[in-house]
Image (cartoon, rainbow, N blue to C red):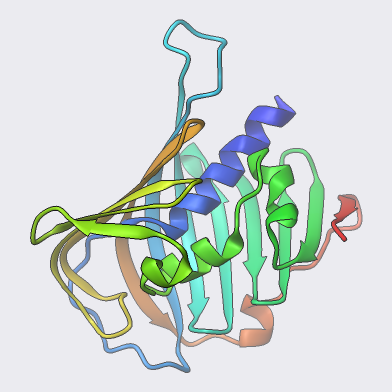
Length: 222
């Protein structure tokens, strides 16, 4: 149960970064704004062998809070709003609260910090780059344009298919049309759709601080 929940949270977080959008035009986004992006993700765990198809599919909602080039916070919930986990990411620190098991994980911006979640090394720079709409080719991916709307990028860990219809703004957030990103390797397949976004009038100190509840077990990654 613990392994499955960790995998679900990990997959959910990873996709959030690698996935698509569909929304009506919103107010323009400035670099100093805090933006909330509401998303839904479908995650298939290929490693689960407890059923005849050897796959387990999970659907989750993920609220992304973003201050560009500084901080990302993800709030992951299951059906009916049941909280699964929270992730806070800067370019120097990762913190994650796994709510059902009451674990709090923290460590450097490095693959080893995400390994307890994904059961494999995942470079957080990939996540950071995708959610910021950066060019994956600058991070070791080989990319090919299949059609006007579809691009496939590959590296030794993952294949990323990006399907974009419509037009993104310069921040890569406001979408008129659709942008969908599918991430897949031998263990997982993730599909993410961004439903809407809004600029928030909230305190950065409240939004981008993740406190460990005293009853949560602390896991520190060096």
